[in-house]
Length: 359
Ligand code: TRP
Image (tube, rainbow, N blue to C red; front, side, top):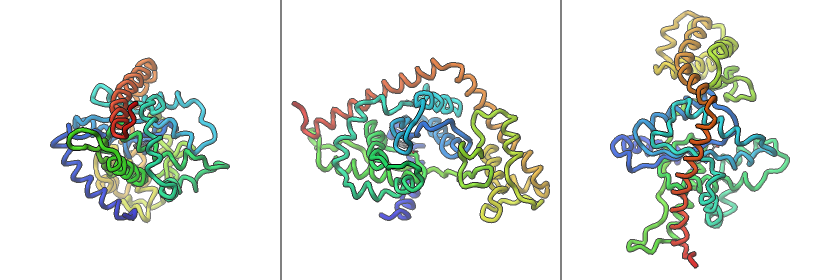
């Protein structure tokens, strides 16, 4: 399937899956993941965290893998990975993810049974398949590394192990992750075909994971650049104070047109602010624009600042509370690792059975 066709197919399937989760949450196990490369900002929140919180509230079981080994694929050194992992968990809990609600958070470095799966999986795909992964190609093009390491080419296989070790069957992802999910399905299919369990219906070990494409809004940087990123200083972090939010919005780029309209193609900066304000308020950007009318950039900024601060205040307060509770954060990780190891160990047992590797 080409990229466009697989995107449209995933989108159609996602709608069916949403209906399935509402009626039978017990049939699904959600698996998502992030690299621990820094604290989270509002782009992460509206792009994926809010969706994870929503899924959690349906009662479906979720696993979040923190892909700490994957951090090393696109940089020469990574300092304080443990601190980055704890910071990420703090932001998750601040955003409303709740380990008491059927949610398991674990760093994959601590689940040897998961990492063990990478070895047999590597033999199920070809170098050529790894080489033509469009997301990996883009990351290589964007990389400033002197040499591209083998981890860069093979991390999608590791990602397949993240998903399949816990038998995640529902993977909420953005479009850029679809090639990795396709590879995961290929690995699962080939494994199931080549190695079968000895039970009476010769069952395959792995379920086929499905992508759940979220309607992730594309949030630009406040300077109008394509992406919010901390290194460009164009973000609003989840832990920014109310004052910092106001300052960041004050500095945000707009245009000189007094009448505020939502027109992403011609007025990207104004539209981005409207989108942020609307997401924060839970309304449509067009409605917010109509409300501001001919108030110009001044009113736009005041309205968006208020909306963001209303939405971010409870998140910020929780983050501050969890920042003072590092022991609890460690405890969440410890419990997550225990549960992930339990599930992954059972999967690895089945893998050894199916491969006939019992001595
Ligand atoms: N590659 C993903 C990213 O860069 C992170 C990730 C690792 C992931 N393992 C995963 C995402 C498993 C979904 C499922 O964002």
